[in-house]
Length: 401
Ligand SMILES: NC(=O)c1ccc[n+]([C@@H]2O[C@H](COP(=O)([O-])OP(=O)(O)OC[C@H]3O[C@@H](n4cnc5c(N)ncnc54)[C@H](O)[C@@H]3O)[C@@H](O)[C@H]2O)c1
Image (cartoon, rainbow, N blue to C red; front, side):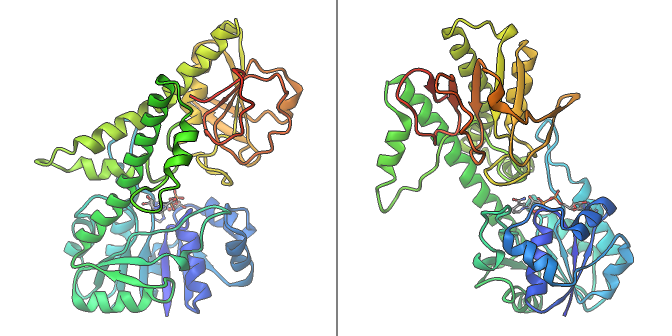
C-alpha cells in the first residue's frame, strides 16, 4: 500500500514513520523544502524510537503536489493554529485540502487528521470529491522524546460512508491497537475537540485551585497530591504558567468559533483564564522582586525552560514568551535558558539563550518548564516555581505563583 502524508510536521512525520514500520510505502509531501531537508539530515524533534525508524526506513519526500495522484491513500496532517485574536487560521488546511482535491484520483482513500472545526471534512473534501472515499480520524500523536508511540493509542474514525469506514479501518489497524468507529466525520471532529477541551478546562481548574489554596494559606501541591490518591472519580492535573504547543491553546477555539446557539460558558471561561495565566505569573514575579527590595526596572530575571513541555524543543505558543515580554516591557533584563531551545522570538527580538546561567546572581529565576539541569541554582537564589513540581526548601526564597 502506498501512503502519501500531506504535511511532515510534529505529527505528520511520526505518522509517516509508523506507516513505514507497518510495511507501507510512504511518501511525505510538504510545502517546506527546508523541513524536508531537516528530515533528510535527521535534524528533527523525535522520540529515540522514531529517530531509529527514520534512519532505518526509506521515506520518500517531495514538494511536488502531483505526487498525490500516485498514492492509494492520502493522509492530511497540516497545522490548524489560531491567530492573535484566537480566530482559527485555516489557511494551511484549506491549501492542503485544495491540493488534494485538485490531484486526487477515483479509488483513493483520503484521511483528514488535522484537528479542526466540526464540518471541515465535509466542507473541504467530501463536497468536492467524487469516487474518492473520505474519513476524518484525529491524530493522537504524543510528540517529543518522552511521548508514547503512535501505535499505543486507539484511533477514532468518522467515515463519510460505510465503504470508506471499512477501508480506513483496515488502514488504521496497521498503526493503532484498535479503531473506534463513529457514525460520521462530524462526530470524530467533535470527539477531538472534546478531548482537548477537557484538558483545557481541567488545567484552568488546577490553576484556579492553586490560587484558592494560596489565598487560604494551604500548599496547592500538597492538596493535589492528596486528591490524586483517590483511585476513582479524580484525574490529576497540575497548575502551571499557562499552556503552549499546537493543541490546548488553540483547539477549543475551533469548537467555539462556529457555534451560534450553544453558549459554552465553562469552556469560554477556561480559555480566558488560561490566556491570562502568564500575566498572573508576571504579577507574582513582581511581588517577589518587591519583597526582596528590587525595582523591576533594573532587575535581572531568568526564565528557566521555555519549551511548552519538558523534553521537547517546541516553543510554539509557549507562555514563556508573554512572561518574558511583559518583564522586558516593565524594564527588567529578562533572559532565558533551555537545554533544547537556542533562540526565542519575543516580539521584535530574537533572544539567544543564556548558556552559563549559573554565572550571574539573578534577582529572580522563574522556572517555567522542567527538563533542564538546575544544579546551577545558587542556594540563596529567589525562585518562582511556575511548574509547581520542584522540591521547595520551605522558606520564602522559593514560591509558586
Ligand atoms: N503537535 C501536537 O502535539 C499535535 C497532537 C495531535 C494533533 N495535532 C494536530 O495535528 C495537526 C498538525 O500539527 P503539527 O504539530 O504536526 O503541525 P506542524 O506545524 O508541526 O507541521 C505541519 C507541516 O505541514 C506543512 N504544511 C503546511 N501547509 C501545507 C500544505 N498546504 N501542504 C503540505 N504541507 C503543508 C508544514 O510545512 C509543516 O511541515 C494540527 O491540526 C494539530 O492541531 C497536533
